[in-house]
Image (cartoon, rainbow, N blue to C red; front, side):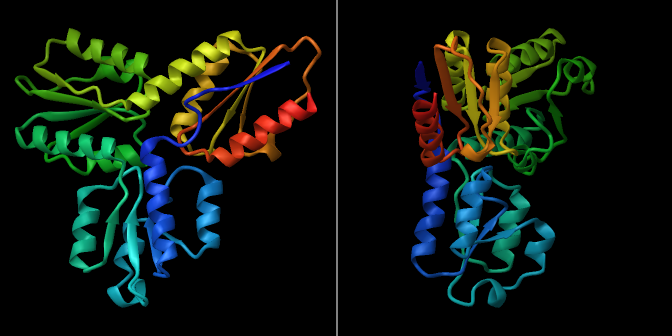
Length: 289
């Protein structure tokens, strides 16, 4: 039996950068807080918590803190990889907190587009998941109303005021084909639209590779955090090509019973999944089946 791990599986550039920044601050001995979980992987967050990193859950938690309580030893607040609304930056500045910005550069790029185009008066359309922290952050950089669209029905039901110009951006981890389909619906409505395809190239490559591998595999294993949007999309894509697709967070979640007819097991993982977990799953399958 062959076990194939997708080349793009595991930490993407933005996640690795953010996680490395937190570990670097831990090494300084400072009191370290992250605004929200630094990435969507429970194992990474748990390891950081064991090293003393505390998570600020929301704006209310931040409001309740002052410079002395957050910086007893020259402490630091690190902004999560998904980014945050502009008002959170302003609040940290107002409270004079030391801030390190670990927002993924590709997400920061979306913030700049949204800020610029909304200042020009364009209404912002974000194609993505409204409850995802990345999307919540993007919305917070607009000076004009923001509409979040995730389904064809939402796109078809959308209407803007006469003469209103639009700017469309995408959550970095959104499905590329689905993004194209939704943009086409808006374009057919005849609006004056600027479309910025802000889906990360790494996301597109990861999804394409997962589809290709799943089409050949008898069994697919998708590894990632339970709250990871990009891992959930990988699972859905793989499931569409390979019925025997498993979604796990760690090796402990894997319950495999492989028949002798299985010739190829494919493994992929979300952008927030540490290589250590991928290797554990890979070695387990190779040794036990």
